[in-house]
Length: 68
Image (tube, rainbow, N blue to C red):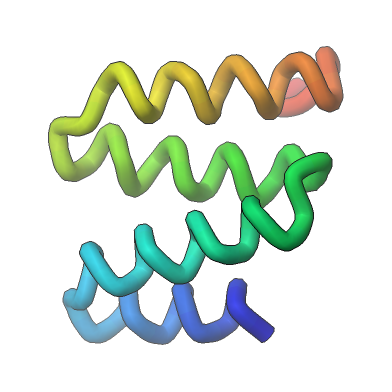
């Protein structure tokens, strides 16, 4: 699964690859709030704050209670 690939990439320091894999996962499953939140975290970690906020916003639109 793409998520496990992204987690593996991140665990070995390949953050760019992890972001790309999560972006692919979001394209495949655009209504999965967890994927969008994970992508947002990595985008924020790499200084891509506007993109991160967009992903966090999308996650909250999908599931307004996400993160509670």
